[in-house]
Amino acid sequence: MKEMLPSAAVGVGVFLLLAGLLWSSVFPASNAWTDEKAQRMSELTGKVHKLLFKSVAAKEQRGKGRGVNPTEAKAEYDQAKAELEKLRTEFESARDNPKTAGNYLRYAGTGLVLLGGFGVMLARSG
Image (cartoon, rainbow, N blue to C red):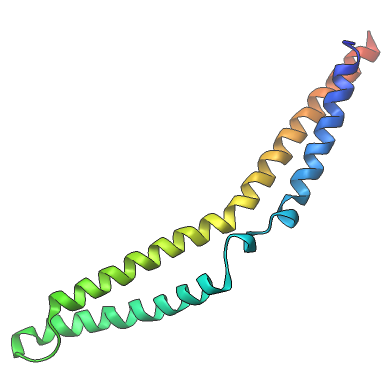
């Protein structure tokens, strides 16, 4: 029974290596990130840039008594920027999660293959 453990570790390690290599294909990032979210992020990016300029222009024109209220412009900018940051964080998470899980599987598989291979060598040598 003890002699089978190193061979089993190698087998499980190879399985984990293969699973790690295939993980991104089986569970792609597109499962968590939809076209609607991508479209909304694109719209928000443009909107945030426009609102930034609008906010700056409102501050500059405050003393002249015309234009948009600077506090309203700033509040609108802050709200759009917060939503954009939330979407950006969600995008980065969706992009990185399959890679991270695949990396953990590959590292664990590599460790088991090396450890099991070392055990097999020790069992055969003595």
